Image (cartoon, rainbow, N blue to C red; front, side):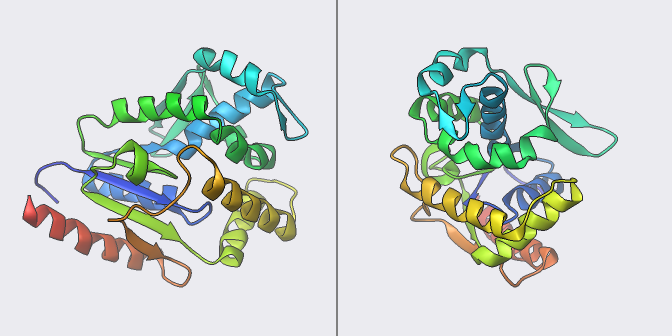
Length: 232
């Protein structure tokens, strides 16, 4: 797929497979991929490890005070063929996916100062286009002029099962009910926060992947991408 490089913005609810979808698109197009959810998870992990979060209670003042000490990088792992998240020089790809981080990431993401810092970093990363970025506010706030905007959704129970199976594979001891509760709470926080709430951009295309395969999703994207490139 050749032509002028564009920006692909993918937003949507948690556990809809945004990251896997975005990562495969980036690989297919030879674009840069940025997992913004991993960025917010890394900030959340930093806060947990430094006792700025205790029993889901946030010390917002301490979090804001220490934002400048947080350095996030994505480094490509040649063995796995994937980019991994590094927090202040340490690989935290496994740690940021655990339940404790999941239970707190939406609350940390809702802090305006956290979002301001992350959005600035995201915009800088994608200023030259040729990028696929997924998150909650990519098409509405980070790249409102993106050539392709996709909003992903799926039934809550289906998302819960996906997340549950992923955590089981990672050795987490969780219940399906616990995961469903977590996703429902995250949905509420993400869509009701004051700063950059999760919502569909007016010109975004909805992808409900409750009942379609990954191959079908990629074929769906290919058609959209080709139609955009033909207009360039």
